Length: 342
Image 1 (spheres, rainbow, N blue to C red):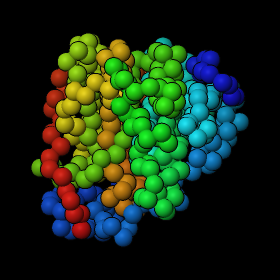
Image 2 (tube, rainbow, N blue to C red):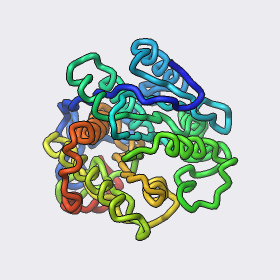
Image 3 (tube, rainbow, N blue to C red):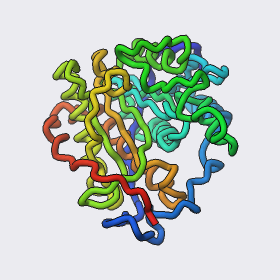
């Protein structure tokens, strides 16, 4: 079903993601691993294999049509250029998990993982039924459709940065105490209105970073909670719990190397700004598709999906509350930038 604003929370199944992933390179930046994620610049991820704006909207229509009693697809606003901004709600559990992706137009793999998450969350299985009872899942699968449209344009480099919206605003600097006029950032205004409407217990915010390596090899994901000094301790602790859950969910994958993202106290990012507003928020930065290459596409999507499903499952079964926030501090540092991966 479709609406003009989120009106109800329906069902959520988050199934454990099965990771059958290629092995990562373990050292240095001067080699390519056959079938692995260290690839050369002539092997970029094919943008044609990712959902366009029209394909995303159609996929959400199909999801709602297949599961009309389970899925609520809602238009929460419009981009600067008039493209719809949609949220998807599945589940009716006591706790609400909000997943945000692609606030920067050139960071698309979280969107692909979010669609896979929604497919799992609507599966008519006993496990799905149980999880839909345990958590309410709300997903905004693409916050910056105008930026993504520019990024898919081969001439985008000559125009406006696709990371930004069409009013040249970095949407990830519009949260918390930002002085940016939200009339220039309707995408951010829509997300902030949604946050107020659904009052989430936890927010996961998916991005891409460039390549880094630490003692464990190539870093595939970096995570961090709200670290601004004015974030309430209990809010920070829930963010740290989610960070620890993500690290644990990916620990045995054979591919993922999860690190801490370097601390920054910038108050206007979603991570800090939403945490300052009382909503525990975790930044999830995956290795960027810009330099990851086509061979890593599936691995990175599955990695993101595993992080989403791990957190949702922990919220659904109540194990989230038993996680020691200090476990997040055991994740390694991100390490140095890898400027050449072949």
